[in-house]
Every structure is written in C-alpha cells, then in structure tokens.
Image 1 (cartoon, rainbow, N blue to C red):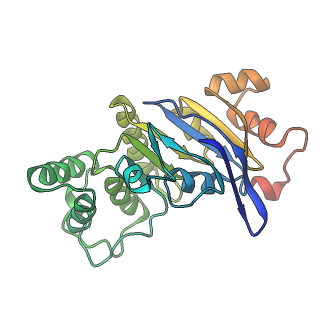
Image 2 (cartoon, rainbow, N blue to C red):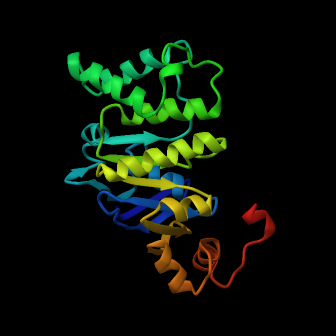
Length: 245
C-alpha cells in the first residue's frame, strides 16, 4: 500500500497510509475502533476505492485491475454472505466456478477444501441455521477454494468458540507454510502474538508502529503486546475505559 488516502463526507479516515506485507508471512493489523482498519482492508481487497495512492498485489494494481486482483485474493470479512438455500457443496462450487474452475480442477479444489477445513459433516447441509463457527469454516473455504496466494481476514475469530478459533489458527499456520501471504485484523492480543510474524499498529488513519511482536516490545519497553499497542496507538494519552472495552 502506497500513500493511500480516503475520506468520507469530508472526514479523513486514511491519511497517506503506506506499508508492506512480507510475502509468505502473517501480518496483523491492530488499531482501536475508528483507526481505519476496515477501510484499509476494503481498499486492499478492491471493495472500496482509495481517493489517492495505490495498492499492489505483486505487479497488479488493485485499483486499476480489480478483477485480476480478486483472482489472486481470498477474503474473509463478515459471515453474513452465505446463500442459505444452498448446501455447502453447492455454495462452494458456485464460487469456484466464478473463479474459473471447471472439470477435474473444480472437483479437486472442492475435495481439497472440504478435507482441509473438516467440512464433511456439513457438506450436504443448507447453511441456514449454521453456528458462527460453521459459518466461518464455510466463508474460509470460499476464500481458499481457488488457492489464492494472498489472504485477507477482518477480525476472523470474532464470535467464534474455542474449537472454531483453534481450527482457524491451525489453518492460517498451514497456509503460511505453503507460502500464502496473510493480512488480518484483530483485537485479540494473544492471537496476534501467537500468529503474527509482523504487527502493524494503526491510529488516526496512519501506521504508528510496526515490526515483529518482540521488536514492538523492545521498542516500547513493554512486557506484553497489549501495553505496546497502547503506548504506540495512544502515546501519552491513555484510553478511557469506554475506548478499551
């Protein structure tokens, strides 16, 4: 992301935002509510257009070639985009076909994602009434069915139970081992510390700190990532109880 700016109704939410995401690594994006994380991720995935600046996926300019970018992206946002009249198998086949998969390649992709995300028991069920964990698994499968080299997730463990969150973390580690580049936002500091190779801290629409978790601790002189985040995001101005809730 290079010098990205974005405003809504005259209010700047991203201010000359620039950062790199290392290839084949997991990068976490931290920020208080209103810091600009979701707008940033929507611009990265082509769902929102920047006022200025650009986002590159390899050599692809997301703003100029959004369709080409989406072929190389997997996106997990909210879990409300399921078509509840379709079974899991039908839903994933639809999205795989939208990514251009056909014939043996389609069948192989569906079989692989079913096994990897333990979807066997859900495969022929309609998604109406699924739990948050079941919905997450289907949305993650949708993002991965075409084997994208880039994966973007917006607070992926929000609302998940322990087992579903563990499955997600295990899947992200495996994807990193396979060379997938992952960017995710989260408010769960233990999750960020456990998963991330690199952490970016946002405040006021800008990056105010970045590095490996251990580097952030050293930079701020903190003993835990939460204290590092507070020091970087708020500086001398400590947040109120309402802001940290």
